[in-house]
Length: 153
Image (cartoon, rainbow, N blue to C red; front, side):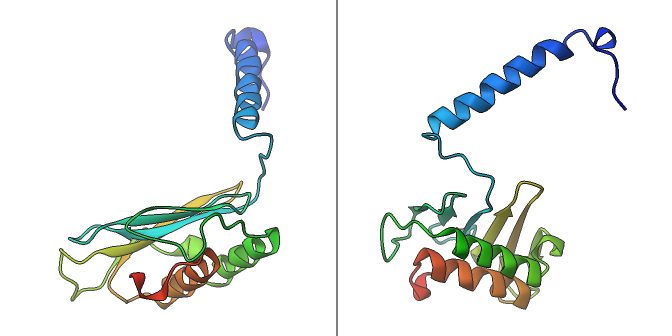
């Protein structure tokens, strides 16, 4: 339902401000804004050094923390991003609980996380212990695509 602007006096001022913000974001990003999917994954918690790997909507792969990618400066093609989003769909990633903890895992164990973002939604899932086949089926292709050494978990 649309309301007349006179009922919301600040509404008309918000449109130019929001438009300016979007233009600023595009300029900061060098004009490469895209609405494609983005992904992040890594290790967190416990008593081991954390790391995070990010895959931007442009395909650019970056890493921080206790991780070294096989190839620095990797940029994944759109087809790989589409494939990874397909994996998320097949594994019903957006329906997984936000936190999955294996009953026999100790609190000082580190866990792995995956975050998948699209224009419509974002889902982050943290798993401690190897108890979710669907999570693993999402994490492994992300690690391979980003060039994370297999033994880094």
